[in-house]
Length: 282
Ligand SMILES: NC(=O)c1ccc[n+]([C@@H]2O[C@H](COP(=O)([O-])OP(=O)(O)OC[C@H]3O[C@@H](n4cnc5c(N)ncnc54)[C@H](OP(=O)(O)O)[C@@H]3O)[C@@H](O)[C@H]2O)c1
Image (cartoon, rainbow, N blue to C red; front, side, top):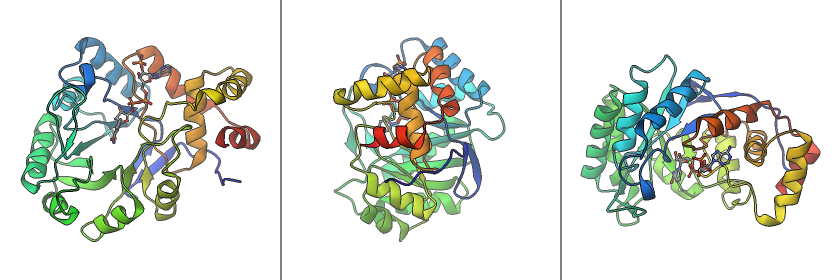
């Protein structure tokens, strides 16, 4: 039986920043293929503002979303940031067109990413900077050298990784402390269970990307039955399962719709029973 905890609704990122576990992922607020400007910019700003008004204090973005348009949009919508709002960004991907993602761990590129993010987000310090991908062509120690410099200079507070193995986390930690890991994880994609458990034991945040995929089609009946019992939607059950899975999970569901945003935020109100949790976990 998988061990679960009763829901804590906040988590201390880096033992320091108090984060509401239901946050927002801003990647959808871009053009087709996560490239270019979002079609309806006013609506996108409204979604971001509504999220913060509703209590979201963790927003995930990246230099690569747009690229750059997404960070600028966030500052346009939310600057000056309300007290306690953490905008987490990432660097380390070249974008050459819609749906084109090329890891780039060249130290100079990383340095430019960090300087650009500071300017676009209009902050003196990035609360959480994440290495979007480890570039297999560049030793991670070299990629992280400018990140460590930025931490020492007060330009970055905390550092995280994305789509990494335990061995890669340990390798990165030889350069600097790691406070979070952002890997693909949801009801249907469970290949990173070992990394999730590792982060839980180490007190790091685990930030599942693509959190709303609510299980393979074979699970539809089971999920629908549980959703009906809670008078909830499939999306809410997928998020409630993640909240119960581990107390260090921070959620960043993405949406372009204020309606879906508010629906997703209500997932914190759902208490899955142990039995329901076990059924969903199979
Ligand atoms: N580290 C990485 O490599 C990586 C990779 C991918 C994503 N991410 C991060 O993870 C975040 C979330 O990922 P994601 O946006 O790809 O996937 P997601 O959050 O799992 O799903 C987003 C999709 O679900 C729909 N949706 C949202 N709420 C819904 C609801 N209540 N009912 C029905 N549909 C709903 C959205 O459409 P509508 O707009 O119509 O609501 C959108 O198409 C991103 O914003 C990004 O910050 C990180």
